Length: 281
Image 1 (cartoon, rainbow, N blue to C red):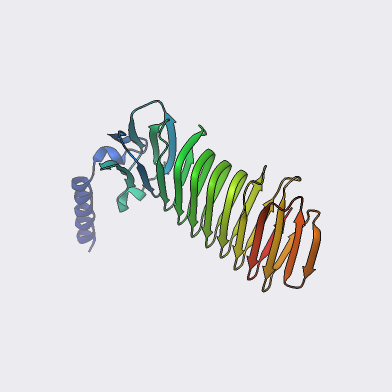
Image 2: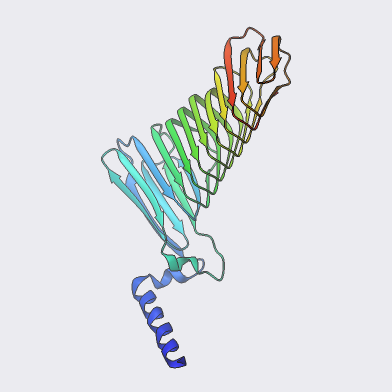
């Protein structure tokens, strides 16, 4: 019995050696690098799972992905689209040193078209350099994302779980669709249409420049507005709680309804919840 078990272990070891790069088993080994020219590119599509990813805008004319750790990274150009994808084999998860792979994605600092990011797990961040895009889409099933200094004509976030922190986001149109998890946005500016099934959404605005639409079936939403905001509030709930700390005129508070005006009432803030809590302050 022991001999059979030993032979089985040896066969597994031989298979792994034949189907993998031996060098990739080293805990701090350099993975690989791949790149593609960025000429006439209209979309950068990033798909990552179980890796720490940093997106770095810099002066360059190509898009490069550099991996430090186990797994494989590809940068494929197809027409006006570039897709960056990280993958790892099942046995790459066995690592006694617990060194999480790190992926660095370098993009031209003047790239201003569309970007789509799919995060299955792990961690992703922008390095903090100001980034201007036509469209930024984030799709998260878990993990953590940190964004900062983003300007995008259209911003879309869809999350089933996980957490996203954003510091400074300026957009013409912002959409958040979250089934759970947490979204925290500091220094937001633009139209916002947000819907959560559960979880938590915190949004801070330095300036109210457009309409806000908030919907929740449960969970918690906090909206932090400037003291000089001009808006008309229209809130309805079938259950749950809507609260506004700001001084409203023509204020109406009923069991399932809250209405009122602040300042000129130029912009609309519409709130509709099934349950949960919305706080405006």
